Length: 47
Image 1 (tube, rainbow, N blue to C red):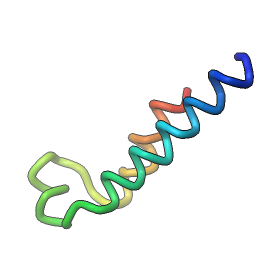
Image 2 (image 1 turned 90 degrees about the vertical axis):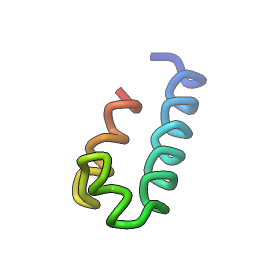
Image 3 (image 1 turned 90 degrees about the horizontal axis):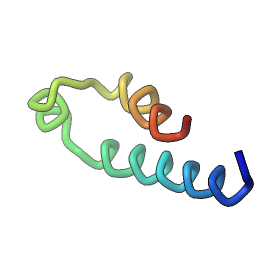
């Protein structure tokens, strides 16, 4: 991977964590995830 792609992936990871983290527990439950799942879901965008 080149450094630019790594940086873009990291930005997407952080954005995903922030956006999902800002949702209420009720909203997370509605989409079928828990707070524990957020980092794992965001990590998929970093790969």
